[in-house]
Image (cartoon, rainbow, N blue to C red; front, side, top):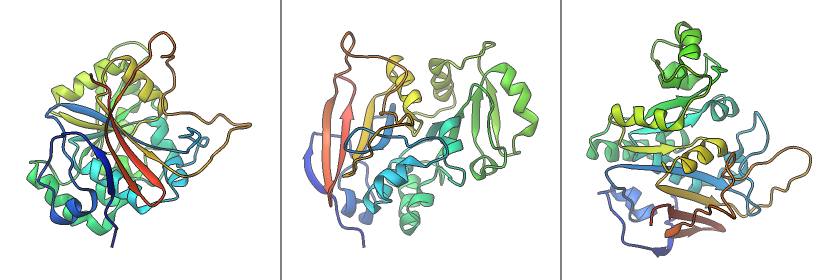
Length: 266
């Protein structure tokens, strides 16, 4: 049985009617009607990636049960989970559902989603500007919305599994994050979780689209030497000219791990 999180600090936040076991473990959790939130695990020295082809999250967290539970819970609250193609390439066997990372409480996550008026699992949304995808990836076979450029949509449309939907946005070679998330709003995805990598995070913050961040601080030192190991936000320089200060919404602890929730809004 998973031990409850220790609540160290929490502001006045929205609260869903969580199933008993989910509430026992985490406590209070809820979101505004329209929100984009992220979830990352980081080493103590700020590393969130470990090179191409490595699922950094599970390595950095040591597959800690509390981190995996929170990952599942945050997915269970979302209309859609957004990732980039790089994240999909780094996790070849992954499926972005609550049950995939915490199967023991799959039924409870299903009850929560039903109470929120949601389908059994969040819709997976994949952002790609190149179409460099493994078309046999189980998450694509299960079904996803692919947001890309017109040229890439034409190139990959017939290669995608039947359960996928591809949407072309713009005639250029780049995929504009504002257009992509504007499309999500049109599709009725109001509560959106991003599990995209640091570059997606940078684009979201630069565009002013990210509302909240969940950060698991793992009690491990990753180090940096030969290969690039990224921090949580890449592709945009904020300090010293344009720092983005955040407000702490909650802090929880389990074992030697800290689970932090921040707001990017004043």
